[in-house]
Image (cartoon, rainbow, N blue to C red; front, side):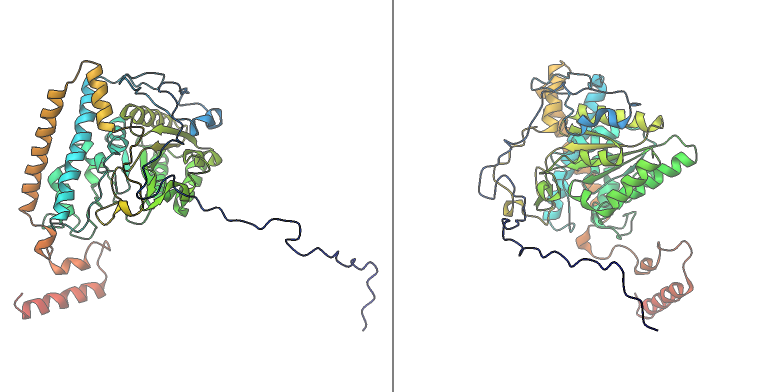
Length: 434
């Protein structure tokens, strides 16, 4: 049967002029670092507000009431070493000295383990030089029972919590006393007893893990909160944004730290979006309270972490903190920063250890002689720890764990086929007289 004619046919499309006739050609913007290898380092574009000028809202305030803090920079220590402004946490000299000691111990630990890698005693190491305040001050601001979900440059968290240097070195060396039995890359620690979640080499997987743990803590009526750290480059990962969604929707009691050390391996922060806005601003779209702080100012890190922890404990939800800092050395021992970074980098926010030392001296609670003596003491502490750890072997000594352990630690109850393979391996070893 024939179809009836269409009563109102569509008009013929209007022809368009050829593309490009009246438009300039499109261009793709490629962010460029401010200076190149062989050139002098330049940080002239960085806007540094005076210390003490950033307002401090109540931790219970709505996130939208202080969105400007995501673009400002919380600073406590001024150029004269004084703690000024509303974010001054008013720490005792004893606490300041404890933080200084932990930061210096972290640097001494890094220096010795870096040399150990160069001596072939381990395969890999990552230093946190210039970023010690980010982890150490935060650890002192949190409760010892709070759960930490670190990235791979927060060894200061364990050191500030008083964890054994020997145990950490055992993991770096993958020796007979390595609690992880050689299954993790060096510096990928996991210490349940210290509330230190297993470090993963996969970027930012710790973010959703931290949010999930915090949600579980709240669901169980617990009082512990979670804190997690990632680099600025990792904020481009999907896990970061999934975590932000859940943290915002369920007001999870979690602190989301972004360590903006200006470099994601060999890519400068502009390629991760730092040229267009701050990384703290990423929290605004999720309705998350967001702060941008001087990450080389131990007092600012302490104050912001304490503020965020109070917000989480009083059920006002998560906080995102961008730590504006600088990676003073290479990404790892596998990296040559001279291939992509300018010479003579001079970070305008200074060295976090020297700034805290200056503050204590300004207070009359420290002096150069005591500082030098502490440096010698901590260097010896690390040397003795290394000597003790190397009695358990180093990576260069060969296989440190029984071969059959490769079948363990994956399933709570080993499946029959793995048990069968393990038994076969043991039988073959016995037959070979091994």
